[in-house]
Length: 185
Image 1 (tube, rainbow, N blue to C red):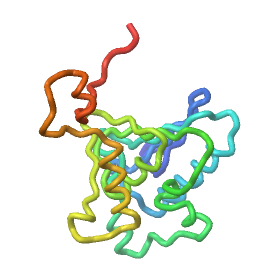
Image 2: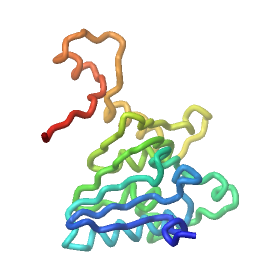
Image 3: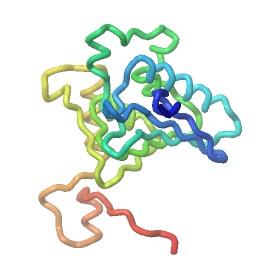
Image 4: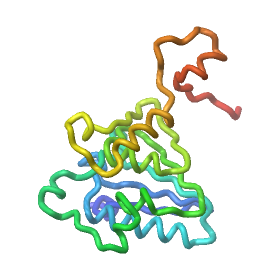
């Protein structure tokens, strides 16, 4: 078995850029205790490394950025966090403020806590197949700041609206997502 498949977080340095990858693709990168602790530690390492300028946060595989909490781990009572880690919020990321940019590269589903993680970043770069959602609201569950996240989500992501004029200039104001374009030839 590849050593990287056992690590819930992969932390890589590429020049002055750090790449942190949620590495649990078999469960859509759901957050369990080990991932939470390692993510908090990796973000702290990034924050204190003067050689690193920006962090890109992504998910392993092509199905999911992060599907939120691992419900099996939560049901088994395995999600208790030490106070020094819990103060940084969900996954050790949501309230873990750093003075360098953190970019969420969303490559699939960002559900529940995954949406909250993405919204806590300075910038979200989403692929065309990215899907954001807060399913706990639909099921009558309230987790953390879901209602605030729902409000921020509607403002952060431009989605199609029905009453849009066909002109290109008005399209951007109506909220249609921009398709990626090749900027450099």
